Image (cartoon, rainbow, N blue to C red; front, top):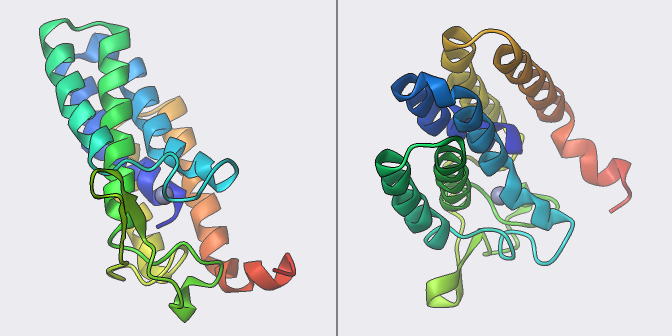
Length: 183
Ligand SMILES: [Zn+2]
């Protein structure tokens, strides 16, 4: 799935509820969720993609623990840590339902969707979303983004709008990306 889908999902599922529950921590809750939704894909550039920074189990468990801590000791830091880890865990787990890590994922030559660290093996892609940047992936970004844009104004709405533009552009050109870069 596109990073915009992960980011919008984390904002809607974790950032928004946390900021509605504790409005005084809305900014750290939303920032944590946004960064958590994005962070795992930094391993596109360092280490092994879908493995080095993708922790479907560990980040999710840490996120639940951090949410308990944030409920008991609410602060900007604990709330941001909770939404960050929950967003990162959801990102990694939902990559299982997309395609593999290959450059042309619609060719389905790889069976590596995301690495399951506790089992020391790769999970095979489920292809519920056929590949990142598929039309259904854009619809997911849209479906997660619209409620967030409705609930929040100001910078959050701007960020969501930029995400939608990026997602739409990527979706339009996704299948040409490997050829453009000659890879
Ligand atoms: Zn990912």
